[in-house]
Length: 229
Ligand code: 5RP
Image (cartoon, rainbow, N blue to C red; front, side, top):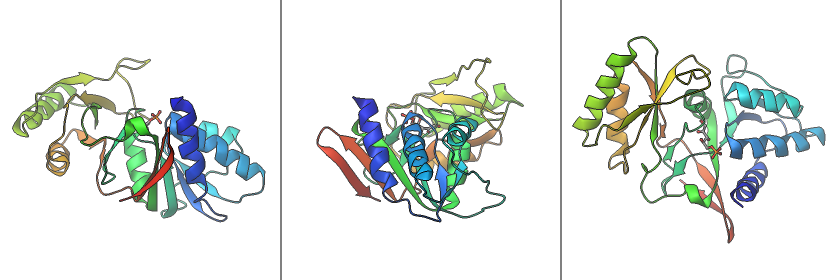
């Protein structure tokens, strides 16, 4: 059911893709529906170029026959279409459940517009039930983890942190970093938390996408709704 909703959200967003566009291609199961649908359109003659947000999405895009480029060749994109782990009414997001948050944020902010695709279970009143992914460099991991815990406490949260596990142990992102997942339950002030986390030297970035998404297609039992930020 949720998979069918993800596909419907992806199909609705695909309507915004036009010939000649430079498209940021997201990561995750919802984005994979988008990649497959985009592949069908490309094989039908649609001429676009994509910039993928992960090695996984790059591999699937290639299988689908989608022409790919990089932000070095195309520093500005027309549109990025990506999933989310949570989104609120203002289209602030938590992303990074699939471990691709850094490239996703770079690609989304290099785009004139970011469109979120999601099933309605991701649409929440307040962000934070989904653990916030925090991407950290391997050097000094123990000290960075302590610094993150201190910042969370200062911002009023219980410092419930876990190191994400991967096939290699711990999980390694496409950029060679690790991910700490912070179980915050409810994020009262996302901007304050974002600023505080970004001041820690070992933190590369985090999964709060604030003021980045322009619109969302949310698929539920009653159809697909389009929300503008
Ligand atoms: C990957 C992400 C994904 O967009 C997010 O995890 C949603 O994934 P899915 O569509 O599989 O639910 O941020 O880093």
